[in-house]
Structures are given as C-alpha cells and as structure tokens.
Image (tube, rainbow, N blue to C red):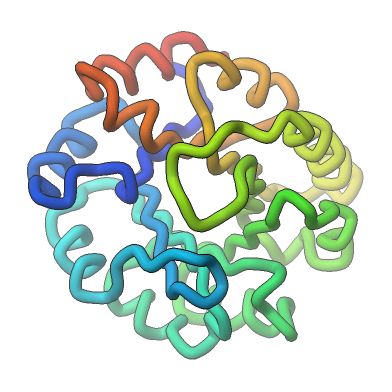
Length: 219
C-alpha cells in the first residue's frame, strides 16, 4: 500500500446512511476521515455541526481530520478537541492571528492544519511553516463538493514542497477538491502527502474498491 494517505470526505457521504458509510471507511484502506465544517458565512454553504461530528467520531476508528471553513475558528478549538478531532485545520483567510491560533490548537493536543484558498499564495505561510503540521491546499473553491480541479494546484504544491524542504519542516501537504484517479499520481509527484477524495469515492459503484485502487496506483 502507498505511503500517501487517503482521506475520504464525509461531506460526499449519504447522510441518510451515515453510519453505513462510516463503517465502510473503517473497513476500507482509507487512512483518515476528512470532515468539512461550514458556517454559511466564510463559505456560501452550511454542512454539519457539532452533533453530527459527535455521531461520526463515536463510530469512526481512524484519524479524524476536521477542516473548519468558518469565521473566527478560535471560538471552537476546545469544542472540536472535546469532540475527538485529531487534526484541526483552519483557513489562513479566516485567522487574524494565525500563529496564536496554531498554538491554541496544539495546546489542546491536536495537530494544527492551515488551509489556503486557490487565490492564496503559499509564500504567505513561510514565517509559520514550522508551526504547521499540515497545509490543506484547496484545489477547488471551498464550499461545495463536486467542482472541477484547478490545474494551477500542481505549481502551488511544488512551491510549498520547496518551502517545507528549505525550512526543514515536517509539514504534510493535503489536497482537497476534485481529486480522482486522473490527477492523484501527478499530485503525489508534485509533493502531496494526503489526498482528500469525496465524490470520486462515494459516487463510485464500489467505494471500498475505489479507495483500494487509489492506494495501489500511488507511490
């Protein structure tokens, strides 16, 4: 199996059969659960909140990777830690004091992630890259599933990988949006460590096999 981590996005699951889909991920070759929390303010959509996340974490047996697409995420850091998040990712664009936010996440025992929108330059993370456990590169505009992959992502990932190497950081690079078997290998080749896959997994005829096939095709 590849060393690249596969994180199915629960936003694309069947909410009427959520426990079934969680068990599918538990029993598959997936590595993480990727869970998008949207507030309808930072992004033009609302996903799910604390009660649903609590239900997911009760059944999930793998790393819980929570991606906050919300304004003022500092308000909820302790809450998400209590709900069982292992990785908590905030948006660069939503944080006035990013370094302080990262420290607060780590103080609660979670890994600290930073997500950047398609228009945000990776060089803006240069001063804090050693404080970041994971950078989530948005390869679509955040807020909705099923969008087309933005081709400039490869270049962003290469620049980010150069920065991480230059700073001797252990930061992982995660790609979120439009990931499929068509671009997965090229993303890993550019430097990606974690691939978030939503519709590609959950809309397939056999999600378990799709996850396994994705792992098998990657280095």
